[in-house]
Amino acid sequence: MKRLSIGMRLALWYLAIFLLAEFVFGAGMWFILRKNLYDIADATLEGQAADLERFLEARKDVPTAQLQAEISEDYKIERSEDYLQISDAGGHFIYRSRFFDEHPLPTLSLIQLKKPRYEIRKLGKLPFRILSEKMDINGQFFIVQIGSTLDEEIETLDAFRKYLLMFAPVLLLAASVVGYWLSRKALAPVDALARTARTISGHNLGSRLEQLHTGDELQLLSDTLNEMLARIESAFLRVTEFTADASHELRTPIALIHTEAELALRRSRDECEYREALRHILLEADRTARLIEELLALARADSGSEALDIHPIDLLPTVRESAAKWNQVASLRNLQFEERSGTQPLTVMGDEHALRRVVDILLDNAFKYTPSPGKVTLSAEQKNGRAVVSVEDTGIGIASEDQTIIFERFYRVDKARSRALGGAGLGLAIAQWIVQLHKGSITVKSEPGNGSVFRVELPTITSTIHVDAESR
Ligand code: ADP
Image (cartoon, rainbow, N blue to C red; front, top):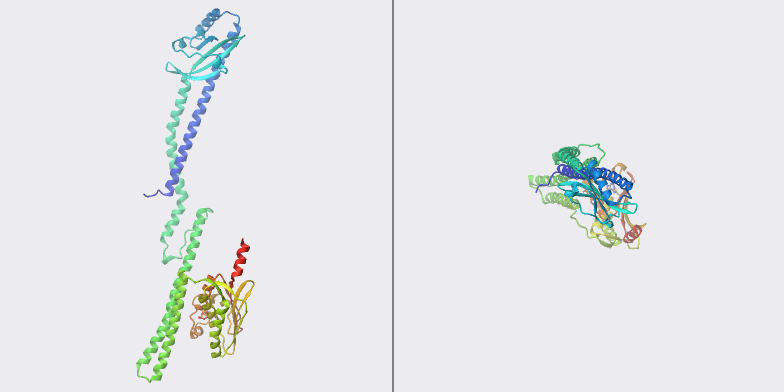
């Protein structure tokens, strides 16, 4: 079933609440009016009762038979329309008006009339308000019941109800129109946002939703959506740039392999020349394979599918094994290489293979960008509860404006030089990603011409326990 729109639901809620309020208000007013009308009727009855009491007081010593005659005379002549009945303590009638003769009222005993009693009764199809009370006239008790018709009061109440019922639908209709209009007006900006959002696709990610200045939740919504669009746009741009850069990087070695093979085949050559051509082709093929491996690592990193095998490891053996490998490279390139590591284990939560890759990337760069004679130093130690691995070289250094962007994919300070050295600008991006997955940090300190220091900091297991305990 299709759900109603928010606008429609708001309007219906408005209508329902209005209907309830109207009902409560109408019923409340009706009851108040009725109470007031009955109060007025009661006041009249009480006045009549007071008159009668005075009348009886004036005749307190008169014998019953004479009293009967006097009341009958007085009431029958002067107040022939009255509704009155008087009886003595024994329940014998002293006076009973004609109407009550025809439509008798149930008689009450003295015990039932500790307090005056007010009631509504239907007599001869007419509604009556009846006041029953006992009167103590000089020790003689009378039970007096006086009535008054409620025709006018009921007529007034009926008219009031009629008007209420007549105006209620009109008010309700007006309320539903106003409710719908209000909800449409309140939700109009949402419609506008939805319309614009529908037009945004991969081709116009630069578009933004209309900026609202209402200072309410809708402004918060449009601002939040715009911020989200900005993030999506920059991620989209990064992916597009990455794809363009990756294709470009892949095209270069393939073009080189193609040219080399083509040149070799153009005429017949001796074995030595063929060997040289094949060596070049192999070199480019190796470079391409490495590049593809790096691209795959980054693609897996982006998709989150490259799961690291993280468990407690000692970093020292990893660092030492890497150092042993790079010792040979150092002697080949005529560079000094020193490895400084403490004796205490450096236990971290990590993936051994991935962390070795970080050390290799940093050492590879240090050797690539340090001309002979120079020195590369690898150190691993524990400082302030963190494992610190640093790679220092005396090489060409990095200008301060490049120091933050060298961690971006495909960024190379000197493109030609880096490529000639076999780099595609992906090493540091991969290293940073691995370090971040280990909740660590990677930083660089460098000066052009004065070498560089790359520093990786990782939380050690003891420090993690320490931090946990502190945060508790
Ligand atoms: P590449 O494969 O080109 O070395 P990286 O991402 O590892 O890519 O490094 C990015 C760039 O940072 C390099 O091209 C180089 O310009 C600069 N760089 C990295 N390490 C060093 C270093 N130790 N000394 C000087 N420059 C460096």
